[in-house]
Amino acid sequence: MGRLSHSLYCCVFIVFVTVLVSSDVPTKPKVYTLNLDLPPEERWMHIVKDFPQLAEIADTVTRRVIPEDVYPLVDQLAQELDKYLPEPFAQEIRVFNFIFRFCTSIVAQDKNGLIWHARNLDYGGKYGFTEMLKNITAIVHFQKGGKTVYSAVTYVGFAGIVTGQRPYGFTISIDERDQGAWWMNALVALLDRQAWPVGFLIRKTLEEETTFEGALDRIVTTDTIAEGYFIIGGANSSQGAVVTRARLQADNVWKLDIPNGRWYLVETNYDHWVDPPATDNRRTPAMKALNSTGQQNINKGTLFEVLSEPLVVNRHTTYTATMSAGKPDVFDAWVRHYNGQASKRLPEVLQKKFFKIEKNTLK
Image 1 (tube, rainbow, N blue to C red):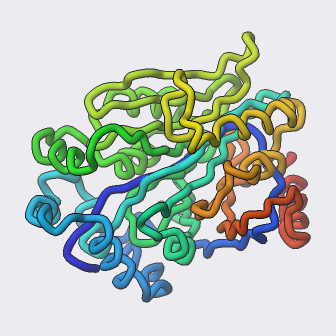
Image 2 (cartoon, one colour):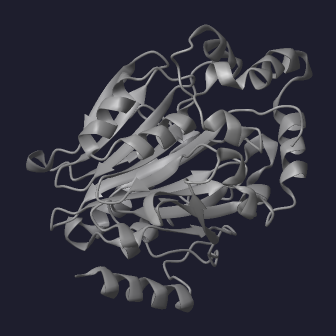
């Protein structure tokens, strides 16, 4: 897999409505089940074999992202995984690992009190990884005793999670918070043995917490190696929050407030209490689309449309995901191939799939 791993993550977070979408003709990622009852080193093998390009991608990530003069620091972390990560993650990572950054997320409540959560994950910029990541995007259902405990949209090769759902419990995603140099993450990992890599904290939360309240408390109180925006949706009315985290504390917890008209939260990669930069304002078109859609029309399809607005979807968007802990069958994702001309129509095949899902889950 190459000699180094680098921790990056990215997202735009929305919990609320679906938006039917652009002319990018979304495609479906592969879907897998992962057996948590197997030894950690065996769990991913049936998935990894379908992606022979992983070694080449990992080498490209290393060469483009990590300055050669800091290799010794990252090597030290890689060689002493047992000291920095609890099992079984260290054993899984010995099979493969790399971690990602950037995004838009939304959490919203519809007119019936159902909480929706949707997100675009963007990655690319100067590193040019967007197309590579599209080719290794997958949906993975993590199971024990043949039953799904939690699900994720992930990049094969990353043992952590940045987009996940615990059925009838909560949904969660993370967006990058760009505060300080990336090497500070490695320094925190060396100095604070209680700090968690964000992707592994999310996965541990999905494994051990069963409620929105439990997930929120764990995210607020756990030290993290990197800063970030954790977006969490629950299974019950009013359960939606964005946690703005520094490495050693939560700087802000922003919640849905239905009585006062705050029925959705939109998080990109900037603190919600300040204006986003004019050069990267995905927040405004997302909010405009949500307001135009209205709380009474929020569903999987309209959320997909919102996340298909120009700027919200862009040339660096790798996938769009939709989730609802109270309606877990709608968990889904689409690989995006945005070409600069967004329309508001899903391809016919996806329209049929969408309406079939909606019919089957309205029970």
